[in-house]
Image 1 (cartoon, rainbow, N blue to C red):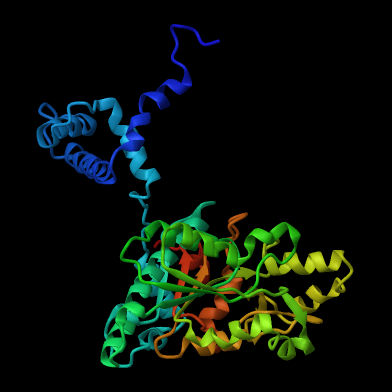
Image 2: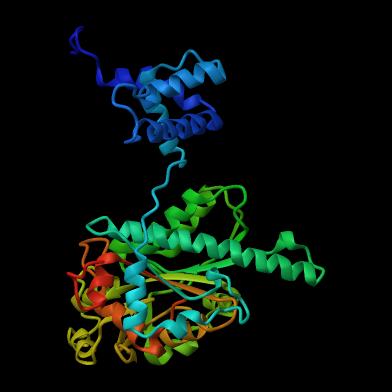
Amino acid sequence: MTSPNRKSPLDGKSRHASLAAEDDEFVYAVCERFFQCMKETHNPDASQTKRPPGPATAVVDWLVRERGRDDVTREKIYPLIWQAFKRGFLLLKAPIKLKLRDRLVEKYDLGDYLALNESSDSVDSDAARQIVVANVTGRTASQHVGSVAADEIIKLIYRVAEEKRARAVAEGLDPNQTRVHLGFGAGYAAMEVVRRLADRADAHTPKLTLHAISPGGFYIPRQEMDPTVYFNTFIEAGLDVECVGLFSTPVVATEDFERFKQNPSLHRSFKKRDEIDIIFTSIASADDEHGLFRQYFEYLSKENLVDASELEALEAQGWVGDILFQPFSPTGALTPKPYRAVALFTFDELAEFSRRPGKHVVVIGGPCGACGAPKTNALRPLLANPDARLWTRLIIDRDAAKALLDDPTIDD
């Protein structure tokens, strides 16, 4: 029983319950004014004896003066800020480390590759290939690298939409019927990107067609990893989307792959893959116990469906990582036996796709979302081997960049 002299934990919620009914414009205005007042009140040059009132008090005064709202007390300001957060008005944007990017470009001789624009005569930086180093570290770095990747993808979505509308007008077609085709696979990184994209979506977001470029699920404990599950996030955000799923087992016998692609459930997905404008996917490291490829083959081994030596054979061939459930070494793609992944693109096809005009491949190389382990060994071939540069955007974290420079203690 609650003491009459003590407030119930629910009192605060019920006391501010009416704030949930406030209009979006009002909540946003309060939030904007609050942070502006914070900036003003924390001016280090301000006189110590004549400091302005705190931000919450200043917002209350502003509401009375400008909005005629004398019902909003100082105690309600912070719950209103929380409302702004819940409604997606507040998004943290991770800082970018340009010096580390520049050092990577120099070390791996990437100048010519980055200068190669998809649009031959374009000088627009958004058209050029890029490395983006997110200045984040620690256990949450994976999430923030995903957010940075999503922000890059948003820019690409609008760019592609503008190009498609311009072509439609030139060809006498309805520009409002154009769609940006977005392809992605399974995994934690894709989930983080999709969430951020949905958070940033609004009425101006171009129409999208979503393509699953690899199946998901892999096995019973990982069914939530299926990319078609992520389609719902876009739909729930109120976006105009069409969906092209990839309903398949995650792997098939290597010798059966070409025939398997003709299955009626898969044929349309493979046929429509050339319509994709932007692909985003992540890589996993061979030495990470949480990598989905490793977990799946370990599962197959426990079920006596593959020999335990298959992973050892890949390691003997120099396996350093996988992308779209396909292992690769410093020299290129590897073919596991007796099964191979079912994906719209092989390693080499993804590299070829990234070099086509107007196509974009965003590769996410943040640390493992489960343990924070870096993906240095998997990332290195994507920088050092010209044939393995299958990205037009490579998004990594600060620690990975330092490790790729072979000096984790470097002063950045």
